[in-house]
Length: 405
Image (cartoon, rainbow, N blue to C red; front, side, top):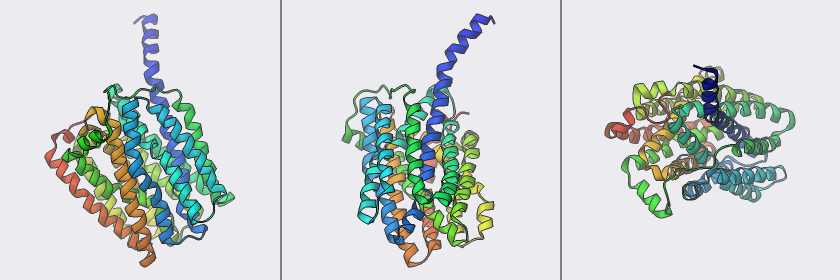
């Protein structure tokens, strides 16, 4: 091949490569923000003097907001075809509101700030997933290879935030969160602002069309039961860790190990999907999640919890890599962002509300170990809808867009 031809091919490949690297950086930055915020949020609220029930209510506010706003954000993106503009507004507002926690005090003020923060933050994950899934479909790159950078960002931030909180106090979480979101905007500006070319989307018709699909509706129910405990663990693990004898700084180290292990399984998710299908991979991940929560309920030795950190990678990493492609597979093309928004609303939203509120009530009445018994029971129930999908839907038994590699 001539030098001129080689240079021409190299220039043609650069836009594709550039978009891939920018999406990696986008997930790294956004999930760094989440990793700086969520693992120690319950400790911050506990240090403010709130009870377990109050912590459960406050940490459930965000998911309650997300139940309403995430589908609306998705529909807004589908209707305007300008997802990056929506994403920019969401990141700026969420980061700005977070800084208000530095001077906040009292239950009512915390409640208002958390409502405002999650009103805008709820747009970030479904829009980012929609961008990554579209790129994966068009390029043939595995969605898991993009999504794993979110796990890297979350793990790194949890470690950094734990160390910083130990040195400077728990208030440092909020500048870290805001700085990561603002830095991510540099990446957002350099991505093509284009959604699915599918025409006008009507709000209620789109919701009705999606929820009338049995397989999609059942998977949304499963997300409520399986992903709610996963998010609930992000809130309550810090309290479990201390109950087992760990330190505040050690919480950051633990999240570094746990979230870091997700990278391994996100990177290899394509192998599991080719062998077991999307539903089969989600069944494996959900079963390990259920076993993990029930094991935590027995108050295991802290060293064993840390030593088996790969359990999180297998359960959460595979779930995060396989769930959005299955949503995309089950939903009509013209409602992709909407479908991801509803999925996130039930998993990140309603399921997390239930786990945070009920988890706090159970902790007050029994102990933190009772909270994890609850998580295990809910996850076992969440396996049943996936079993139905695996038996009835042939689409989930083959590799799909963005999961071939």
